[in-house]
Image (cartoon, rainbow, N blue to C red):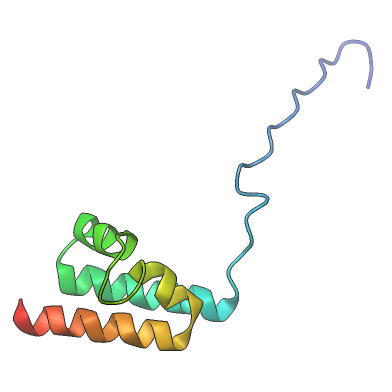
Length: 87
């Protein structure tokens, strides 16, 4: 670096650096349940609200359950299918 060059400011670290990445299977389940919720509930806001609100019937937040396991994804898909048939 010569004397005419200004030092570059340091870049702040991204806030999500310490959060664990989803496995490919978990990311796939997240995508599937999100797409289905958008389709069934008719919009982004409704889907996000549903996926992030604890559900007593399911025993947790639908998004968490779907991401955690294939069984959880199946339970959330079943709940959404019930909403589709009654909506």
